[in-house]
Image (cartoon, rainbow, N blue to C red; front, side):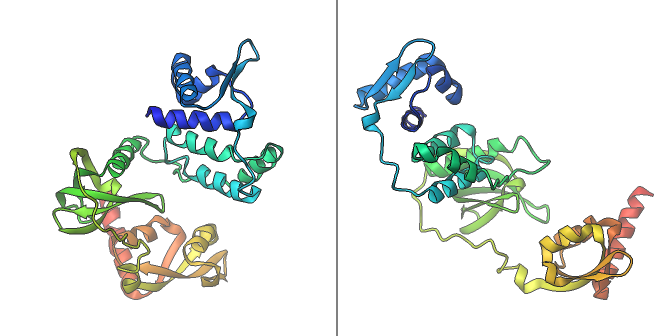
Length: 309
């Protein structure tokens, strides 16, 4: 939107001494002519803009108009930039650039390099090594519906493969363990539900708005279903799986064993997801107990073997 671009340009001008129209055009993926029209609009709004012709010329805001940058500490701004960097992989470039520039405009000039260095010391990359590169359009549709309070219509595939048509009021988008979830009020269930975006297809925005109702987000911490079914199983694993074991159950549940092996007390839920995790470890992992889990793994391995035989 033009108003977003205008605000972002103002923040960029507050952040730097001078910048060329060509550079601004590249940043916002528009023509220099569009940038000059934006600059004229900003000037007409009362913000004192100065332009400098020539090779070393550019556009700037008069120094006396710059904001006081002492409100935030260097640590505050480093933390803000770090947080913005972590979501830059999930938001579009156009969305994030204005926000980043607004935060950078708060940097005292003498601390700029030091703060940039600190904010780059920790990088949080939420993208996967491999995955669906065409997933962003779905994400963009959901964000637009959230922003405009518009209904979403889609087909939803449950965990058991059952398909249903859903019409929902979207309220919250959540990223958890590299998976996106949408919380919304479902017209079919007459209640708030959580939907996994990868199970959604044929997503459409309905061109009618709803009046938001009182919303209390459902906690995605597993307390509703994981804690009641969670058991501890005994695994004998190869040393090469140590990193994954530490991430899943902590070093306190891992003990060295002979022949380059580890004995692990592993948290496990006896369902399709849980068994797929164990099978994913391949021949580097053996379940020792309980016996029923060991038998089920044997059954699943035989079925898999039959497919290839």
